[in-house]
Image 1 (spheres, rainbow, N blue to C red):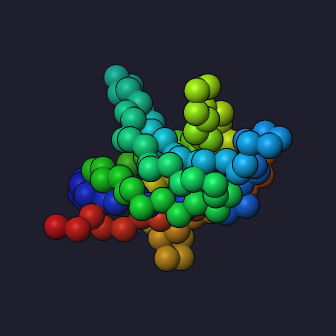
Image 2 (cartoon, helix red, strand yellow):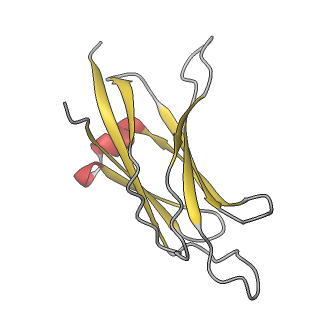
Length: 129
């Protein structure tokens, strides 16, 4: 089984502003979790992106590196969250992507609609050496 190091980048468009009346525009960031793909495995948080202030179409620059075994179904969960100062952050939506689906898509980019509103894009490329 060939194992390759891959790099995931994310952006979103058309997110719903959930900041609340008189509180400006949402400040989104994303949390990426590699889901368990077999018995005895546990989900692993790959990390989170930077916060993009006042944006409903964030283009995050943080990328995530992970090992991928070709032929093995591998899922990632991406949660988009609004950072709220002095309170709990609020979830704006989440989507699950299968790595093979992303790699098989044109431009190695896959889009998923979020429940509330907006579209989340995941792009995979070969990790730089």
